[in-house]
Image (tube, rainbow, N blue to C red; front, side):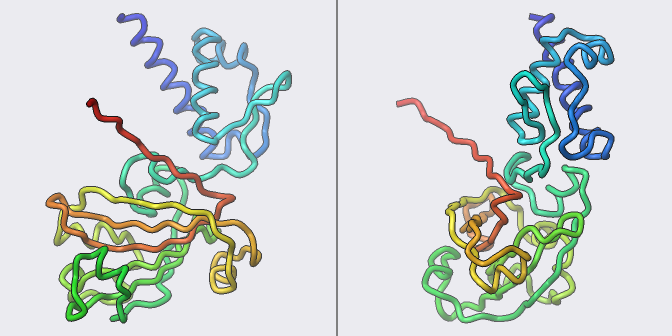
Length: 242
């Protein structure tokens, strides 16, 4: 058992170190990695351990294996939403070792739809704000977020207050617990095409999400648009015993 744990720890260390080298540009886009033999020699471990580390990086969409030719860094590493649980864009970018920037396009009171009111458990007499932001990763537009929030959580905040992490702003007033997401594939329309700098008609991911407090109170309703060529989504599904 102890030997199995030790092997697992080495495999994790090797995987993390190779991923770190890719983030830091030591291994660059489309570059072939050293052979399993050379990596095993460098890390002082077995080739089986290297193989497990490589398989882990393949699952994370960081490298790709070409039969008979070795392992290569993916030409465009996709950002995996949900990889580290419920985190915001700023936190996810930091986890990938990348720089992030947020452009606040608009912020103000909006006329809510029935969908928004139902998702946030509010009535037409409640004030709801719309926050539209473009998120940029390493100078590349990645996603456009349209977020709808009850006044209670953002009272007194200004447009410039949302240039950083929205979650950090909200957590000053409420504990964020979990989020329900629905992901669907759509085609890029003119407005989003301009903001994300991708051609009209290209495939993209549209995500509807509702984020809740620990007591199941809805905090925000979000409609976001993600570049399909740069994003994947990771979810955990639980099967309960009957």
